Amino acid sequence: MWNAVTRAISPALGRCELSHIERTPIDVALAITQHHQYLRALDAAGCRVLTLPEQAGLPDSVFVEDVAIVLNEVAVMTRPGAPSRRPEVASVAELLCHHRPLEAIEEPGTLDGGDVLRIDRRLYVGQSARSNTDGIAQSRKLLAAHGYAVQGVAMRHCLHLKSAVTALDEHTVLLQPAWVDRGCFADFRIIEVDPGEAHAANVLRIGDALIMPAGFPRTRQRLLDAGFKVTAVDVSELQKAEGAVTCCSLLFRSDP
Ligand code: CIR
Image 1: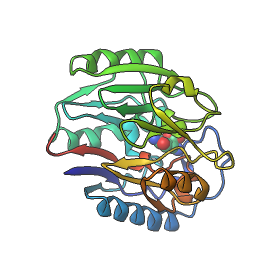
Image 2: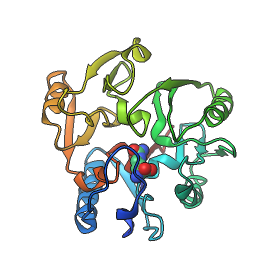
Image 3: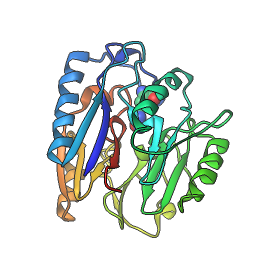
């Protein structure tokens, strides 16, 4: 059974961190409606959805993915690269400690969960503005003890590694070649996003179900043509906050 930890949207979402996109007004009421649809999609994909209460003073707190790496054996609480986001960690740790032994990334390390792509026993970690060399080295040491290999991945022009590449199954990735080199994923079958849909690579996988943002119909068609089962959810207001679909949940199994 998959659990999905999520968090209700802060009314301050409009004051979120932004790195690679221009600030445009966010309709918070619409964002909340869209987030409910996202939660329904998680439920339909077979998740037990756990929703933490909103943190009004923390604009980006809906993006729970960034504060932890949750594996079958352990959860690593991150130290987010944006200082404004570090107060988001504690309340998620309080929940996760009931499900996993906890470890933590410590100063001077920084790491955002959005940079961590797990495929089988390997974790690809984006060398981004949010995840520094020390944070990646700490995660490598912590996770080697549990049999995971951690590999840093160069990337460009986007916030997180999972803005540029996500896994569709254990053998296939969806990739934006302008933001990460195909060669880093040479061991996998690579499906590229449609050239006109730059932000389409962020897809959330739950077993054999995929959730992706609406608004990328040509990339979605590529996934359907390749035989994947895809649900599209409109997350336009979260996209204005530089979020997408992986960032709004932390998935872990209750029967690891
Ligand atoms: C930030 O800049 O931290 C937020 N506005 C967006 C975080 C999105 N997180 C993710 O994709 N993992």
